[in-house]
Length: 297
Image 1: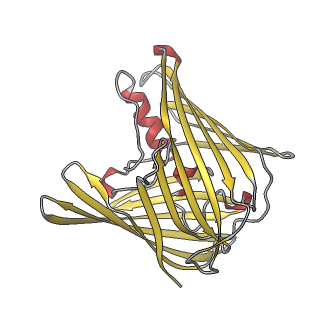
Image 2 (image 1 turned 60 degrees about the vertical axis):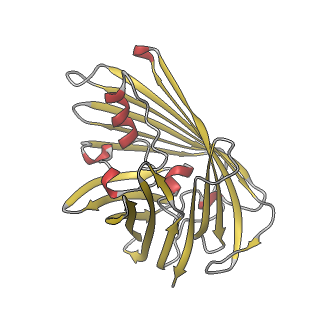
């Protein structure tokens, strides 16, 4: 999975659960996609507060093995509703180098209206060239968009169904999965800058564990002052730059792990559809990944 930089070492067991269930990244490679925490969650609570200008949301999720507490902040108000454009969309990624070959992916979205919201279904096709042979696989994700909230319902890989019911946050790595309905879209306006902060505390309960891992994710967004020409449904795009920083703490074993930032440039059509995204690792000027809209109706 691209960008799934996972903490290794003594806390591998703890962080795997955090990374799979809390840090939802772009789904590169169906075989690498794991179950999210919400597939086994027994309780979900949400408290939403809207202020001026900050927006704060709090979630608590728990089962017999762990408790997840989250706080989520955006320091800017909405400028529009999140209403995905209906239609059919095809994206293709740049080539991704593997240890023994290369791969690329094709993402096909179908956006339809449902009672009270919108359904976004993505079929992800992976094509890998390994030792001179082409291999392929596929996976299907479905999201529900309702009341400016994006909920990841489930993932289907082969004969397996992974139920998530996970609320997507407008953090840039998450947004790679939702190019036709990016969660940050309701906050975008010319020349605007805003920050997103997301804090998670995962407490592992006996007999499976006895400790807490804290994750802090911060994302800075900067929107260009002028629209640019682009290849999309309307043909005019916002240029949205984002920088994501991630840090993990495990106080019980005195661990602090901070990853190098990832930077993103999104070209977002006035219809709300992303027509191109570029991902950069650290301060590199060469994209590690490019995704482009190649077809739509």
